[in-house]
Image (cartoon, rainbow, N blue to C red; front, top):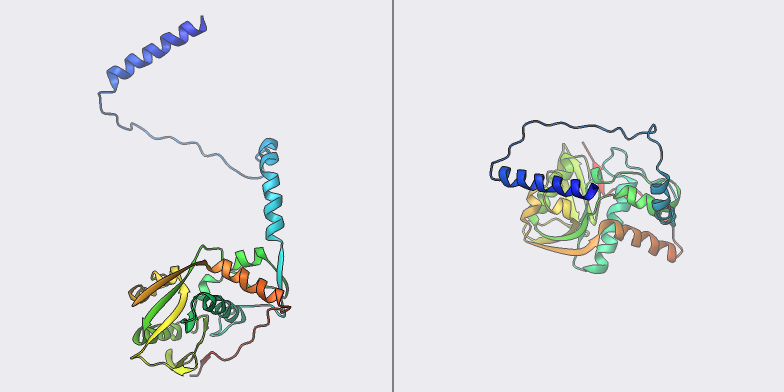
Length: 250
């Protein structure tokens, strides 16, 4: 009996559709219901049982200690910071493993999201520092574009760099050196950075017009993990110093 009624209902719907599907349909009204997801919502034990093994495995990996720091790596609003130096130096070290033509590395401190505490460094710390999927990129830049970059760094009172040293006077770059040599605007340079900046992010639109671009197919976060793990395997701890790579002299 139920099947008969059900069959009739389907037939009626098909007839209604046949008659109505030729007419254009328009939205006559909108309505929505908002469901709150908070502590008041009862826990679904079936879902918890399903994801708990994955959660425990993920937590175990994220809590894995991969190295130690001699001191807290901070990032105050100074031209040069311990975290900035660590990040840029690690980026350059790992980049040179893949491309020996690289002369310096550049990052933006706004992209470095956390500091590292003194002591154990875990996988979670590295994810916290670089939560993005940024990829390492090498740009071949005109010397004039490197000067624009130095001007950008000076205007922003410093950014994380490695292999580049400079002074800032009245918000302008001065005594800029690349790999120990004075910047020559008639030359070209090989700079390591990541795709967000190479694509013009962070108000660096001129980087989109580099002479060449080579993607290293390596995520920045993975490079950091590799860098710290390598130091640990060789019996070293992270020991960063402020070395005067960017100095403000007004």
